Image 1 (tube, rainbow, N blue to C red):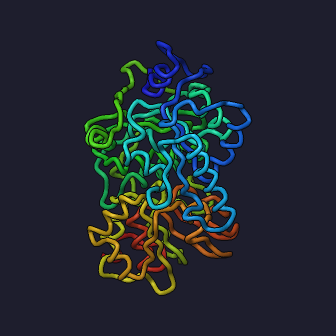
Image 2: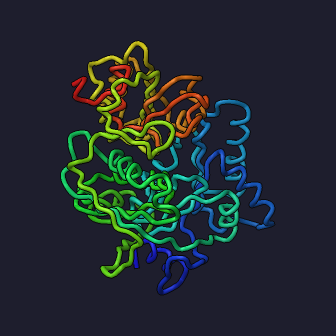
Image 3: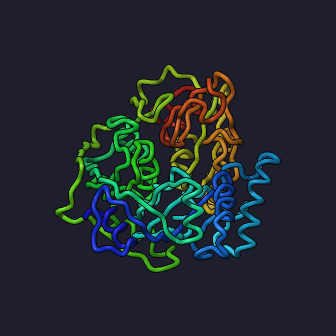
Length: 418
């Protein structure tokens, strides 16, 4: 079996499973945010369940419209807080302790290798970078799992993506996944497991791996996953709050398809409006002027991303016709940036340094776009209206390209400003 099939089999109490089978499986972690948890709470109450299945396995994280942007957002967030108090949930993260959910849970050692994780958010697939099966579900499925500790699944086929060759300067996990989505399309892995491997992945940082698995959903995938290794162990060991299991794919595992990429030929890549698959080399887009740059989100808001952007913009200024918003993904990332002097670099450059929030990624707050405005963002989705007005435009890029673009006021590559 593949690693995905092994994890599902183990959680279903089965010796094996096959693609296409419908199974019930026990979940290790359920998560929801201030948009999706209120729906799950209302559905949970309809079940008549006297209690949640496990108070330490349900994570509620107000991050989308938090800090609360208006009265409606405040009411939504209060539902999470009240439910967490009523049921004594151990994984409720209030503003000041929270972060963007898909960055926070790995950082805190809450999701671990071998886990089966469901979240009422499409980018739950992020945790596959740890060697877990993680996927997004609807709020009603999350509610049922909150009561029973189980969820149903159709076992997905797996597709293997092999990456080899040395990465070019500034090219990272974001470029690899954008290039991949560009090659297969937004439905190229529909309801399949995207399994990433190869020599390039073996040397890729955990931050890069988390970015790649985060965007598996943008290719239509059920989950993204990487077989855990030494880098996984070094990341997980000091964080883990409980035991974990490393699974791997069998040498005779069957795949629906296998694709290979020579990473030495992958350039700095940008996804153009209005699909993640609409990719082009960054250097071909120098004529695109921009109004806003956002560095952050569950895709690229980790300390490695903040450092990369700071390295580009240090001693320089944000273009006078452009605004730059930097959003660390968690409070811990915020502290690292503060202690390393990165916050000062951005503020002196004329950028805004924000509290952790999803904010502008989903057109929530802290950087919503007006009609006709264009943004370069390190976020993961650029559908029409995603970050604001339906007639605004979003280009997806890595932190280095985003920072260089902030300096130039147009899409740029790092070499243009260094």
